[in-house]
Length: 538
Image 1 (spheres, rainbow, N blue to C red):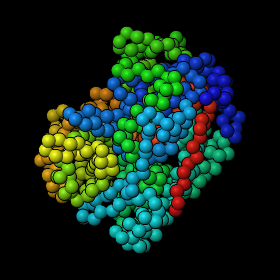
Image 2 (cartoon, rainbow, N blue to C red; image 1 turned 90 degrees about the vertical axis):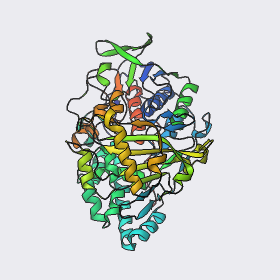
Image 3 (cartoon, rainbow, N blue to C red; image 1 turned 120 degrees about the vertical axis):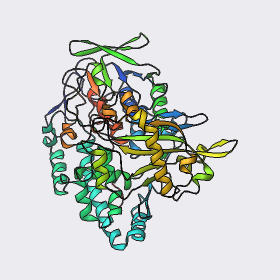
Image 4 (cartoon, rainbow, N blue to C red; image 1 turned 45 degrees about the vertical axis):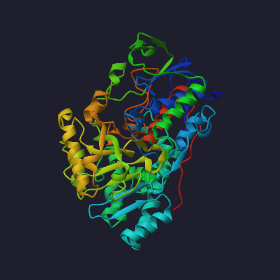
């Protein structure tokens, strides 16, 4: 695929204006991308499709980054994100090199989950979350009453309008300055629409104006945690996140989330890109303001005309890019991965791929995990993931019968908010969580969950992540949109940043977009293979 963009040494004129978008100046034929997570893979695909010679360096022995895998004794399990939304963004990245999910080797097959989630509340009530509006309204009417179902439809319509106004002009776009928010007629119209929709109020308060049942309100506000904020503090523009989660659908790829990274990596190398696994980058050589060479731990050096860094903000300084000071980190998480005997799991009160197990507390829970002085949840809300219920091929057959892979995620404070001794307290805290689940009806959980991997904030810090959180910088106002850490640092002329710490932010879809936006800074093509925001039926 040929690059038809403006030459990289000339600023690209943004749509509808004469204001130049900053791009890498000078030659950009050879690009090194550091990190084969979703951001790095996305950037590498777009750059390869634009005719660049791309070398992708990854320190692990497999691609994926935070969407990677752990190897158990006789099985593999996703070790990172388990919730996939907007799979179109994967299709777009593959299309940059002329591939589709079906033509990957092996084929990448992605299926929509129905329901997307299954919620269980402290009062024993359960509620399934469907992307289909009629199915969801019927479920809400059954659990919360017909009046609440009508209110849900109005909330759904509001979230769709927020998403439509936000996606093209504020998510899928590069910013050089806060003034870029109003530089084009399209952005001014989108900003005006967000103001009319109340997008700069608070998400929790906005949702409460639509809904009366506090249980239902939780389903459309817990996603604020993805942005690192309590719902009472998160801007209402983040209504776009529950819209993606609850209206646009949650998906699962055959083989697990790790299959996405494998497919993207295969498409990249088949298109001529070079992928070096087990290759840790130790430094970058600069000539003035330009990165010229990337050095690795095995003594090799890779020359470059442009460099894409996907390192976490907590470790980016060692590559010659100064991290913005005073960043506020998002809350972190404790995540346990392992297996459970299938006969035990079949007795549990909920049989679903994704279960959100809500405690009774709500505002207090967010205050505990997201406050400046963090504490462990006194009444935990947890995410349980059981992928074999969707893909039976993931069951593990052992001499004592079938077992299923199982993951438990518990939000917790980051290490800036609570400098806890996780190597010491981690196993004990996990036992407390398992006891809580036992009390909530998950019989046999404490005795039969075999834990093969336990990740804590210390795990993330050891990997170089900001404040020991895999969710990077929180989306407070001063770290959102054009105020977020720039993907084109002012200190260099040819180094670009991608990943969840930069534009547009945290999450699988936004991380994929960040790779595309980083590639744009190098190719000059403002919107390669543009994806229109999807608006579902209301």
